[in-house]
Image (cartoon, rainbow, N blue to C red; front, side, top):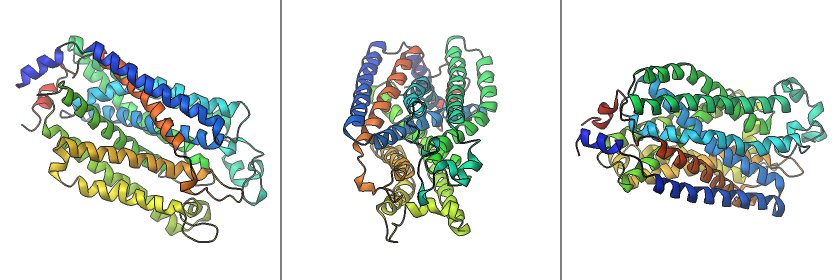
Length: 425
C-alpha cells in the first residue's frame, strides 16, 4: 500500500461500535477484578490485600506515566518514526483520571483511622524493631515534615493533577491538528514538553518515594525515582507494542506499521533494559560498598533471614536480575526477534511480568511477622495481586478504548507523518 493510500485509510472514521464493544468488555473484566479484590478484604489479611492493590495501581500508573514521558520526549526531540506509536500513547493517557480514582481508597483508608494499614509511619503508635514506636523514632522525627499524612495526600493529589493536566494539553493539541493541520499545535506540544518533562520527572519521583519507598521509611536512596522511571518507560513501550500488533492484526495498521517501526521500538526497549540494569546495579553497588546500616538493611531484608540463611526473597531478586535484565538483553540483540510479531510480543509480555515481580519485590517485604522479619515470598497470597492488576488494567484499557474513536487512527496532519510512514524505506 502506498503512503498516500495508507494515510487516506487512516483518515476514515474509526470503528466506533467495535471499540465500544471492546471497551464494555474491558470494563466488565476490570469491575470483576475490583470486586474480587474487595472480597479479598473480608476473606484474607486486609493489610496484604491493600498492598496488592497498591501494586496493581502503581503498575498501571507507571505505564501511563511512561506513555506521558515518551510522548513529551517525542515532541521535544521532534521525532518522526514514533508518530504512529505516539497516537496510541495519547489514548492511553485518558486513563489518568480513573487511575487517580482507583488510588483514592488507599488515601481514604489512611485518613479513616487505619493509619498503619499500609504505611506504618502514618501511625505514631505503630511498634517497630526494638519495641520502639514510630513517634519516638529519631529517623522518623527527622523526616516527619516530609512523611506525614497531609503531605502524602497533597503530593499524591498534585502528582495526579499534573499528569492529568499535561495529558489534556498534549491530547488536545494533537487531536486538534487532525482537524485543521495547523502547525501551532506542534509548537504548543513542544512547549508543553519543554516544561512537562521536568514536571514529570519530579512528580514520578515523588510518587515512587511516597507510595513505595516509604514502606521502609528508614531507607535512603537517591536512585529510586530513576529506577521507577526505567520501569515506567519499559512498561509503556511493552504495552505500546501490544497495542500496535493488535491493531495490525485487526487490519487497521496494514500498510502503515512496518518492520522498521518495530525495530526502532525494539531498540528503545533494549536501551531501557540496559538503563534499568545500570540504575539498579549502581544503587546496589553504592549502598553495599558504603555499608551504612540505614541503607544496607533494605537489601538484608531481601537476602537473608534472622538466622543468616538465604531467604526466599533472595531467589526472587535473582529472578529479577536474570529475567528483568539478562534474558531480555540477550533476546533483543537479535534483529529478527525485534521485527517478528510473535517474538516481540513474547518478550514484551515477559518484561511486563518482570515489572510486576519487581514491584512485588519492592512492596511485598513490607509484610512482616512479629519479629520484624519479612514474610516469605511463597507465603504471600498473590491471588489478590493478580485481581488488582486485572481490575485496574481493565479500567485502563476501557479508558483507552473509549478514547480510541474520538480521533483518527494516526496523526494524519502531523508534519512528520510522511517521514513516519516511510521510516527507513
